[in-house]
Image (cartoon, rainbow, N blue to C red; front, side, top):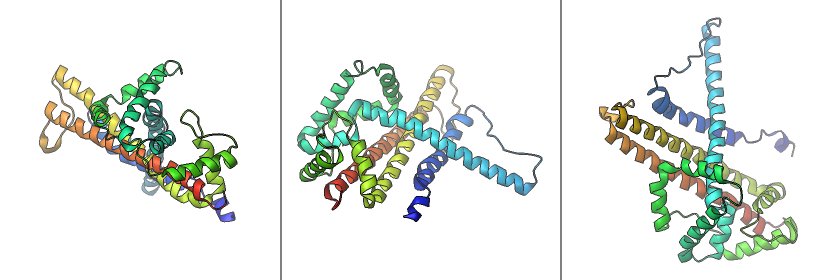
Length: 298
């Protein structure tokens, strides 16, 4: 117990999501911002220090910068990626309820119904500006989203949770977690369930935490690829207006054709990371619900 109390919290999340996400974004910052705009990266040189002290200062400064950048990416991705999904498709925990209670052949139509219903509720819920910003931010991925929406290959309502397991979750939640409260798609019930499982069923914590870390990393990566798409759109517009192309492409190819190819590559990678984020975020919620359902002593 004492070991658990002095154990640094969120160490893995810090290293993988914050530091890893910030480190991954550096080549994209250099390629799409620093190099095209001729911005020099800071050298972190302090003439008053000797060579050894200078290297230590530079390394610590770079590590701190990468870590803070990772925090910024995680925050922006939560606002523009995670909350965009929550706004237009609902919480992942709600998607699990819909998945278990809906036949597989009807899930695509259920997804479209959910999207239409939540879109109609934007004005009544006072979320017009935030919804417009979050929706327009995903504009570079609209072609991929349209294909996935039309053919039903998004998989947002696909869950591994069996019907009998959900019934056990509802029984334990209603009788122990919050007596009398039902699991419905129009209520915020998962946070209570999550907190209960973390504090009362610690054996489930490592598996849940593993999925949380992976989901957080993919969310940040999806944001990095998506913001890179916006820079590519900017440079494509400049090329069409001023016939200038500031980005050096592979094999010395440059111009509109190379830019369009790179744009669609970035968009596909962003959608892939988004789908991966949804998958592991759903696994996190499923793990908490299964732990509540099958724990011997909830």
